[in-house]
Image (cartoon, rainbow, N blue to C red; front, side, top):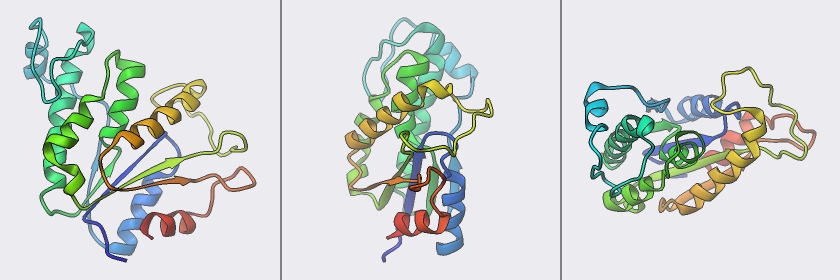
Length: 200
């Protein structure tokens, strides 16, 4: 096994992303872990968002006014992180741009497909990255409990996962794998098995 310099761990809330990331570090050593959360409200983007049209990395976007600041923040953050991914540093992204392609269209009213344009511009197809998408088997899974901290409601999980799989397919990153975390009894698979599959 030749370790990757960059790992990206994506998927729905409460599927074990943090556990997997800890396992990767326990096995391979130090990585800078970058966690992507909700976009911050920054004055520079709030001011820029007041303009009727603007040009970004992915072209002009039709974005609802209340989300324009978030859109500009997200564009800048993903562009910068993709450049970092090409830098040669050891990085694990806890969520990354794949989640933007999913959540922006459901919860922020704009297409997140600009991230795939950014991938091409920055050349992520030539970077030493492994994209890991964790999924669950909704027919038998019983390991999810809604604690009210997930981005979307439980009823949206199937739609969100379908969008994650679609966005995963659109990514030009070459080294990709989907890992089902649901065991045959509906519980979580052992974390050691998931880690082994992620690193194989």
